[in-house]
Image (cartoon, rainbow, N blue to C red; front, side, top):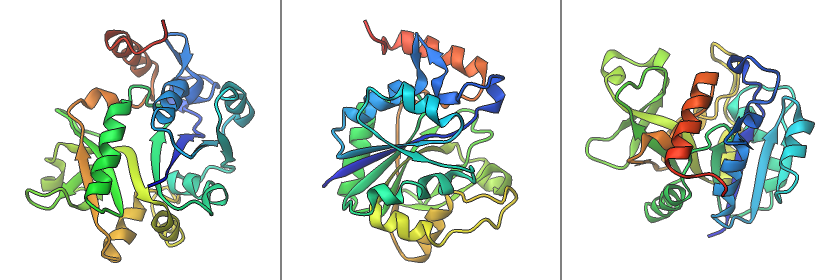
Length: 249
């Protein structure tokens, strides 16, 4: 089965206290997005589409040595809207699409291979990479069927019940979708929410309505889903990358 990869790299990263696009902040001398691109390339995908937005030309320049397609998100109206911008480049693509965050440099290529193999073995319409955190505060919770790989719903913290808040399994923001199903579902989501944005996670609601199977695959290493939103998290990512020796010689 053919594979395409979408990398989210349009964000401003306001909490980084810098005008530099978030994905271009450096750890061990390399932009965050390079680690993600290297992991994506190791999967031998047919296409890699990088969604650019804030200071798009800078991001395109920084990733020019990679064989990628740049999709512009302007204005930025949420994660679902970001993925909508890739449709023109994936219209003729039949296969699966892996969605990654350009600000999560610790993502492990072997975990991604396992995630894709799991998705295929379950004949799922969508699969979400999850992790169990000691403190899941701030993350969307993944609610599974009892003792099952199947997901009942993904609920944002602000919308979660007390029982759901007790769940430690969280949504990493890494997904595998059947490509056609993804774009059909994106055509049905709306901006009826507090942020007035298109949320990518609303696609799962469409999947559930249509009886499509949504699965969860849990990594044993929560560190690898760490997204960088603050200077402190950047320092922590650098420490972890050095510890894992995941940097160029």
